[in-house]
Amino acid sequence: MSQDSVLERMREAFPSAAERAVRDRGQLSIDLDPGELRDVAAFLREDPACAFQMLSSVSGVDYPDRERRLCVVYQLHSLEHNHRLRLRVSVSVEDPHVPSLTDLWPTADWHEREVYDFFGVIFDGHPNLERILMPDDWVGHPHRKDYPLGGVDVKFTEVSVPPADVRGANA
Image 1 (cartoon, rainbow, N blue to C red):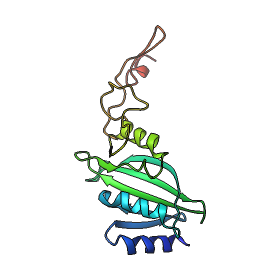
Image 2: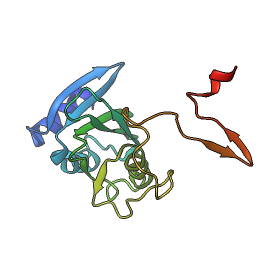
Image 3: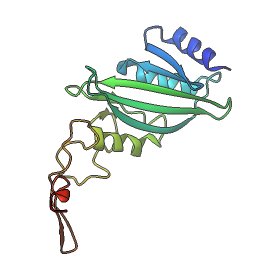
Image 4: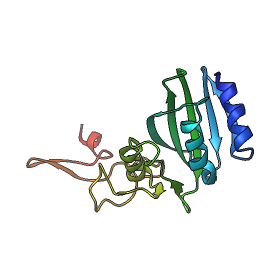
């Protein structure tokens, strides 16, 4: 089954789910309405003609010039048909909720936690949504484009390193 056939099949089952579809470098990317993500993902996984039984990764992207600036990207792979598919959903900073896909693909567990940690996207229904790489008391989400850089003193075993914006001043 070709990628175009997968898109046609998905559109037949969910006519209003795809906001747009783009082919770039041989890979199909489908932008979905976040409310349709779970149903579409379950369909793509369970339908024998699609058989996207592997979730390779979940990542986040911040597009600060967009209204729905936080984007979650899912890389799916059909081992049976040797096809790849990219699903994307975008949400606003004010309402960063996306349904969790951990029950469909258990590997989504850690990937979703990382996106939550670095971008602040909340995965509704996730079994253990908490920080995974940043300290629990960390304020903010460091992969957002508006996150401040530099200006924080860092200590390395009794050695003080000045903030990044001051380092070159004395050289």
